[in-house]
Length: 164
Image 1 (spheres, rainbow, N blue to C red):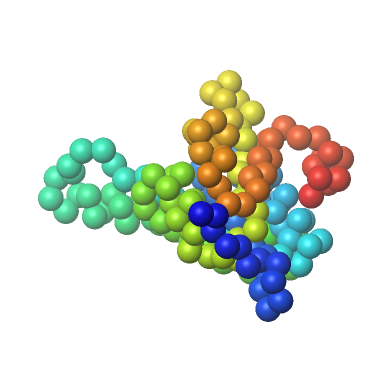
Image 2: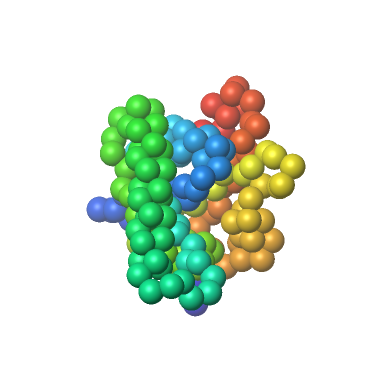
């Protein structure tokens, strides 16, 4: 059964969800979302995902590693939030989750019925567009209850502006 989205009903404001990771292309995705939000009246949620370490870390080290990873995720969100503030003129919502990326993205979309669009950054390096883009585009995109917008990192500025 499809998840009921309320983003465009009276009293609701559509939200654009951006996944922020350590790739340089995330700046382009945040810029795209900020321009789109400014033009459409939407708000923005930025999601950073901390992927748990494999195996069992030594006593106490696991908590320290998780805290460091969350601090790094917070710094990435701060950087992207500054870009959104400059471009769109408002403060985006920030969320940090721990788990597997596709599951955490879907969980947030299911939890917030005002999310109307998911924006992902696609890498332009030789290693490909990135694991989240590859996973979502290949296997789970059909299960997402919102449109997925993939922003290529190498998109020309004129094309980028026209699409946003």
